[in-house]
Image (cartoon, rainbow, N blue to C red):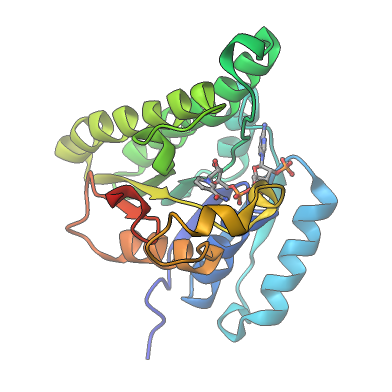
Length: 247
Ligand SMILES: NC(=O)c1ccc[n+]([C@@H]2O[C@H](COP(=O)([O-])OP(=O)(O)OC[C@H]3O[C@@H](n4cnc5c(N)ncnc54)[C@H](OP(=O)(O)O)[C@@H]3O)[C@@H](O)[C@H]2O)c1
């Protein structure tokens, strides 16, 4: 039987670790050719080897890496010059925040917005333009956060960046969807066990989560695979937070 994502070429930012790695790995297991993006080349290379070794479906498929900084528009134009045929883009790269706004330095504010929000905007613009030119549709997934909609202390800039991704997703679902058949969707994870949440007080936090645990990167990857496969999913925003958004 043909693997569900056979023939797809999927680029994933932040693919060297955590949720981005899990998404790239899941796509590869479902038959896609994957392009792993991130700043740390050796980490990307290790992630690529893991994917090749763990996925039988990867035999004969030329997965690759591309060192890339989402904050730099030039990095995106270099990427598309080398890989003009991307038909799935996952904007997953991100940095977090743990500081009251009044104590957050201007450079930190700029870095969070440049990475989490501008990075995804550049990706949607540059890769979206290439998808439009190819006239074969496409799928973009923005990894937002529960914190786009729910309050927390010490995350104001992060929350603003992730709320921005929701606006970006809604606008482009219409702008790209109507004329070009490019679907744009978002995932809003709650607490997921990755490097990003390692320093949090998990025991205290899980008491507030109806599922009584953090999610796994694979559970987020499940949602990403669904969004690529389901052709009716456009402007779909998936809460994946163990029920925390309902509390
Ligand atoms: N874990 C959670 O609970 C949670 C919840 C909601 C949303 N999220 C979102 O999920 C996404 C993935 O996070 P994660 O939990 O998997 O954490 P992670 O393991 O720290 O992954 C973050 C990734 O972003 C990449 N990155 C950071 N800055 C970059 C830049 N300027 N250019 C390119 N890549 C950059 C990092 O790679 P390099 O350093 O190698 O570049 C890293 O692979 C983030 O957008 C995060 O906000 C996470």
